[in-house]
Length: 178
Image 1 (tube, rainbow, N blue to C red):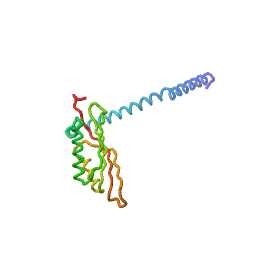
Image 2: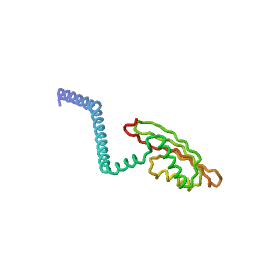
Image 3: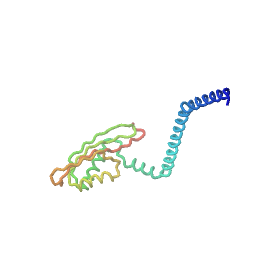
Image 4: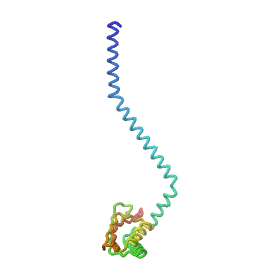
C-alpha cells in the first residue's frame, strides 16, 4: 500500500469511526427510547383491549351487580337512610346476640353523585356473636364497607369482648338531586 492510499484509508477509517460514534451516541439512544416507548404503548393498548373484551364478556353480570347496588343503596334522604341503616344494625345485633353500646353516624358528601354515611359502632359480646355480627354486615344486601375493626377483651379469659367498627354506607343520589 502506498502512502497516498494509506492516508486515504486512514481518513476514511477516521470518518467511519466518527460517524459510528455519532450514530451510537446521538442517533441510536433516541431511536431506542422511542422504540421502547412504542413497545410499552402497544403493550398497554393490548392490555386495555384484553380488559375491554373481558368487560364485554361480563357485561350482563356487571349490569346486574350495578342494578343490585342501586336497588340496595341507602335512600338519598339522610333521615330515611339513617333509619334504614340503624334498623339493619339492630336486626343484625339481635340475630347475632351482640349488644350495641353506641352508634355515631355522620354524613359525608364528597361528590354530587353519592353520599356516604360514616358510622362508628361499638358492640359487646362473645367472640361467636361478634363474628356473626361482622358476617351479617358483610353479607347483607346493603352497600356497606368495614373500614376498621377493633376487637378487645374485657376479662382475662376472653369471654366478654368489645368490637369497634367504622362502617361506610353508600347513598346514590338521583341525577336531578345535586
